[in-house]
Amino acid sequence: MMLHDWQNIPLEQMNPSLARRVIHGTNMTVASLTIAKGAEVPWHSHLNEQMSVMLSGKLLFEFEGGHEFTVETGQVMEITPHLAHRVTALEDSTVFDLFSPVRDDWRKGDDSYLRGMRK
Image 1 (cartoon, rainbow, N blue to C red):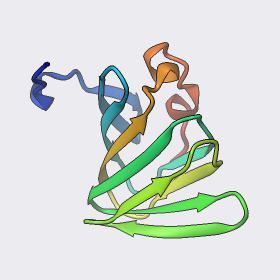
Image 2: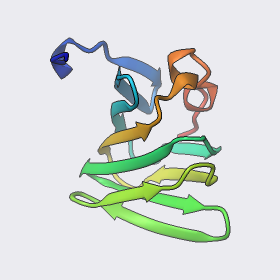
Image 3: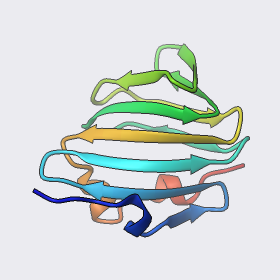
């Protein structure tokens, strides 16, 4: 059992358009992200199931096969494992991303796709 306080989690400025705070548990990763309007998270996929909970703003999620969704405050985007996707911030946005299992790639620093994002 462990209590986490977001105020005590280091803010990681991934690039000028995206910052995150991350907690890695035993079986899942939780991240709080702020994304500036116009920022683009490039195409990627991962073995993790993902739930993106929109706290504020608006994001466009695009998926392989041509599917796209505009996700707004109060909505949750569920992404199945291995599904290629990208995201464009239509407004300044804050989102909670939950991943299962743990994002080992993030824990190991293998997250260059976030560090080189365009705006």
